[in-house]
Structures are given as C-alpha cells and as structure tokens.
Amino acid sequence: MACEYGKETLSKEFKSDLKGLPDSELVEAVVALANTDGGCLYLGVEDDGTPTGAQQKHQDPVGMAAMIANKTVPPISIRAQLVGNDIAVVQVEVPKAQSVVSTKSGKILRRMMKVDGTPESVPMYPYEFATRLSDLGKLDYSAQPVRGSTREDFDPLERDRLRRIIASYQSGDQNLLELSDEDMEKSLRLVVSVDGDLTPTLAGLLLIGNEDALQQFVPTNEAAFQVLNGTDIKVNQTYHGPLLKTIEQISASFKPWNPGTELNVGLFSSMVPEFDERAFREALVNAFGHRDYSVLGRVRVLVDDAGLTIANPGGFVEGINVHNLLTAEPHGRNPCLMDALKRSGLAERTGRGIDRIFEGALNYGRPLPDYSRSNGRGVSVLLPRSAPDKAFVELLAEERERSGKSMSLDGLLILDKLKRERRCSFDVLSKSMDMSDQRLRTVLGQLTESGLIESAGTGARRTYMLGAKVYRSSGKVVEYVRQSDIDRVRYSELIIKLIHEQKTVSRNDVMELLHLSANQAYYQLRKLVDEGRIRKVGSGKRKARYEAV
Image 1: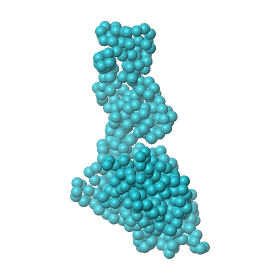
Image 2 (image 1 turned 90 degrees about the vertical axis):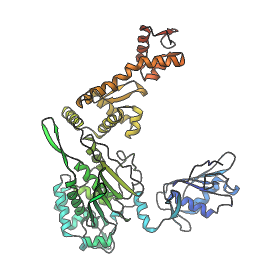
Image 3 (image 1 turned 120 degrees about the horizontal axis):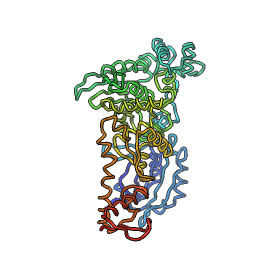
C-alpha cells in the first residue's frame, strides 16, 4: 500500500493507534514537537506513512485539545481535526513553544535527527535550556552573572585594550573613556550587583577576563584560524583568550593571507584586497557576538581554495533565516555582549553589520556571501574568492559622482541579480530580493531613471535588464544588442509559428506570447499584414483574428 502521508520529519510525527496509544505517549510527542519548531502529529498512521485509523476514543478533537492542555506545563494549545476519507486519522497541529514546555509529570523532550536521517524524540537536558531560551529571545545568556567570579578575574591589560579600541574607532562611544574603570564596566554591563557585590557577567569575562578565569568559568570559549592549500595545512592556530585580544590576533594572522589587486578607476589607483577588510571584521565580530556560549564549539576562520569561511556554534535565532538576513529586524543571541562590541566601535552601531558584509562583495562586483551551510547547530558564511569587476567598480564610481551618494544596498542587489540572470521579470525580482513590492518598484524606478537598467513590456509582463551604458562600460555592446533586440527580430517568426499551430491568432494571443502591450502587439500584426504574410479575419481590433496567407 502506498504511503499517503509521506515520511516523518522534525515537524511531522506519526503515531499508530492500532493498540490504543496511551495518553502519556501522545502528550510526550506533542511536547517534543513544541520544544523544537512545532508541526503536525498524525494519530492513526504507521511509521511508514500508511494510515490505519485512530481509535474511536481519540476521535474527539475538543476532548483531545483539553486533555493535552491539562497534561502539559505551561499548557500547550493544540488544534485537532479528523482527516482522511475512508480511514479516520487525527491531525494534531502543535505550535512552536515560546518557552521550554514539559509534561505534567516533568518530562521535557525535543525532536532531533538520527544518524540515518530519521527523526526521534529525545530528552532535553538542563544545560540545553539556555540555548533554547536564547534562540527564542527569552534569555540573554551573556548578561548573566558568573557565580564564583570577581572583578579580580578581569585583566588590567585587557581593560586598557578596550579603552584603546574605543578611542581608535570613530563609531566608539567616546564618553566611556571619561569614566572610571568600575563605572565603565557598569555602563557596558560587564558587571552587575549580586548580593551587594559587583560580579562579572559572561560578557565581562569574555571581553576583559584573564585567560585562567575564562578556562575556569567559560570553558566553551575557543576560536581557531586555519589556512589550507588544497589539503595541506599552512596555518592552524587555536585561541582561548578574551575576545578583544583574540579578534586582534586573528585579524593580524589573516592579513598576510589577504593579498590585494591594484585597481585603476579613472585617475585614481588603489589596492583592493581579495576579501573586503570591513566585511571580514563584521563577519568575525558577528561570529563571536552571536555564537552560543552554552555549548562546546569554536569560532572557526578558514582560508582555503574556495575562499574565506567564518563559522560559529549556534544557529540563527527565532525569526531569522538564510532568506531574510537582510530584511529581518536585527536582534541576536547575546544582546549584552553585542551592545558592548557596538559601543566599543568593533561592531556596526545600527545592528546592520550583515549589510556591510554584503556591500563588501557587491561594491566590487563579486559573488554574494554564501550562508547556505548554516543550520540549526551553527551559522557559516563563505566569502568566495573572486577578482574585482573593474568595469562594475567604474560604473558605481561614475554613478556616485553623478548622484553625489553611494548606491543603496537594494540597488546593488538588483544590479547583481540582473548581471547574473541577464533578464528578470518583476515577480522573479520580488521573490529573490526579499523586499516589499512598493520598495522594489521605487528602487527599480530610480535605477531606470539613472540609465543603469532598462525595462520592456507592461504590467505583469514587464522585464528588466542592465542598461546600455552598463554593457557599454564593460565593452559588451554585442551582449546588450543580443539581450535587447534578438527577441524583437524573432517576433514575426514566433507569430507565424503560433498561427501554424492554432490556425488563427488574436491580438491577445500575441500579447501573451511576446509579453507586449496591446498597441505593440497590434503593430507587429499590422506589419505582417503589410508584408503580405498574414491576413485579417473579422473586423475591429479586439475581435479581429489573423490567419496565414
């Protein structure tokens, strides 16, 4: 018998009810789903997806919802309904819990994938609570006081390093430099009062703690810098010190492996590094600022043949994923730590450091940063190796000189998309840009007015391509002519072919076939009539049809 419900996943669970599933097992399955990403539980379905039916006692959706709410803490509000035509199956929709939930007897479970790729429900242990609550934005782990530590665990040299960094960055909070050491630590929430004594927070120890204290109180703090040439290991360094020191050490180690290319733009010449330095710094600081310090793991910086990879333990927090990185409201796992990094000047003060990472690639016509290897356990970004696109850089420089301002990130993303795809419809751009249609229309209008892009067609049929001056600046006039005019040359042949297929065509047929406006379609048909290749059948523009001569 064919499987009707597919396969089990992290968000889809099957439970057989042939022998009468105990309520306790049903509740445990619901708790596991709620403590992961929510999903659906199908009662009356075997593990292979074959429906066998739910017992009569379980076919009361209202009673089941009440039972589950009464046996979970805090109560889980599920929605149950009977599905299936011939065989009654109960579908239980489980929402994602916004805290850690348990059965009334105290069991806490979550869903995870086994080695063979099938899901299972496993216990959630106390040390995993911090990760779960941090992911949901319910707990700032970095703001928690570290019991047993004191201000004596701070390293005076690291405190001086913090002051030096604040002074060296224009975006640093210069007011902090006027405060005493203790007041500066309070202002940055590096210490909090516990029972009348100032106790370091996790953020405090991470930023200015001495290495011995970090080894004792934050054993998960670790970072690595590696350089591979093929499979040959050129560099493999490990760091366990405070973050400010580690960031400077990794930056210094990375510099020799980031060669520059001389780029002449107009009358000016500059050295363009293989990896944008500002993008590198933002990605590195983000990795330390957003990693999960409650789990073992390390921030890893890898330079290899593919490019530069920066990865950290801990997946994206609630509400952020690979597809909305550039548009989601900025928030992170460790607000206290990130606030200190922002006020020191190391991180982008607006919280939009991710924009800088993308701009670092787009401003030089390079491939976009690749976050596709990120998952629930960690975030990884690859900055691919690529030479700068000289023609594209010159084009942006000319546009900056003309308009008096830099190109917006949205504009850069659209130009990059059209550069790679050649031609895109509005719908394609809307789906890939992850911005509102109104915003997209505004940016497309600005780019059209500046001559950077051109459009063809009307309404939903409108398509966009790079403008003539973009192709001209890169010496690709032939490609421009091919993109803009080859379709128009083929219009007549396509219309004739359609007539041969369906005997006659109307103006609407031509509009749909060639993505033209009504007047443009009529012009093409009139031209074929004048050439004696087709003739008009019927009267009027709307009702007229055309057939081959």
